[in-house]
Image (cartoon, rainbow, N blue to C red; front, side, top):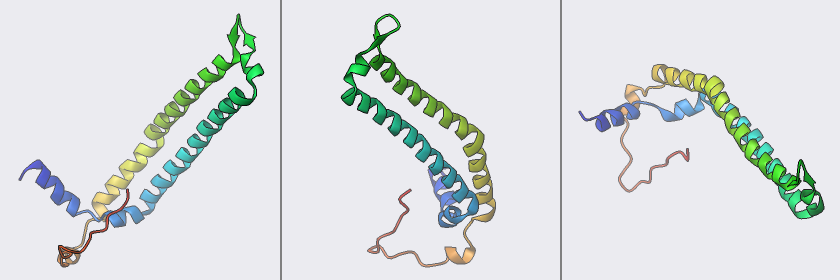
Length: 136
């Protein structure tokens, strides 16, 4: 049996719908979504403030400090640093929080979420019947 065929048969044995409904998986996706929403808010607000200052406070942004460097340059560099900070925070959170949750979901999925024999004997959908798939 080739690796692709072995992978397909293993993935057919897993009940993905039950995994998606499991409390562990829901906790993982909930935590990720909360983090992403917060990170997006920080990023968009900081970018919005920068754009607002660039458009409406041109005199302020043109003010030079520290030997002739305009405030606009520091504001633009803050966007780079915010991007780095959000990325670093995500990577740290992924290593410390998301990875252990993913591991727990994977372990429990292997032990608890295999399809029953009776479900495997159910008739396959007809060729002209569309198959619904998850958007994820």
